[in-house]
Image (cartoon, rainbow, N blue to C red; front, side, top):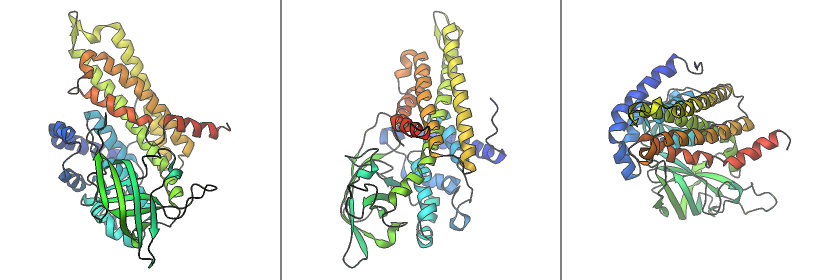
Length: 385
């Protein structure tokens, strides 16, 4: 189905990204998977390409673009090739909105130029071993020093994407005592230099998918964080976190659609080449019907995602809208990718085939950014249930 969501600039950017992936990522991707992340200098290459500065104001070295469409192009092209850019999606898709919205002028001057160049890689630390979707249950503490110059940070975080290579981590911590009557109060965001004393990167977690995206456990023991590194206002973190959920869920929806579309493309190519009982797998009626159904599902996802992108661009994408987009695309993508893997037969279970990687990578889409069950709760509330 013809798309109208992208203009000529987006398509020119797509061509650049596609060439970059072919030359800089595909030839070495297996090495990245073995290491668990790209080499550190890869992020500098993304900085040089301009990927990190698309939405950053020109005064800080960026291009000053608005919206999410350029990031969507990257998601589509990496999925198309069956690869990823490591944890760069967190850097631009999750952390940047917080810096642009809540950092003061001095902080932007200090952090954004390095952010754009890739010299300063970032991550965000919300989840704790005992708190998943329940962010109000965060127990990591940050107590203001007696002289008021710094916070003393103590606690632990887990499932932190980009946590191994990050230089600056946005840590959500409790800066005032827990209040059972208002569990969302008292949370703040501190921007923590990963070279700080008492800051420790623990285990690099071994995931079933997203193997080139480093995910780690972090711990903080009496880490001193200057008050100048408080992001926004003290005690306002919960509202800040919910503010960015619409974009986060849109990003996941785009990724799910892109993975499903890529799965169909890989399956079509495979069934044309693979012969069974003396003829290409593509010649069997079952193959044609399965892929026809998958293609229709992908087209529906595409229409949903494109509409969501347009609404987000105009500032009209609501929390329920984003929840619907995430729920529909992630659930549908799981079905499509599974069917496409099935058509590969035993080879679909072998990692040298991109479909196996997509299958593993896709599974987390129904979990992070709010589980499918959480999305259903949001949607139900929006219709008065």
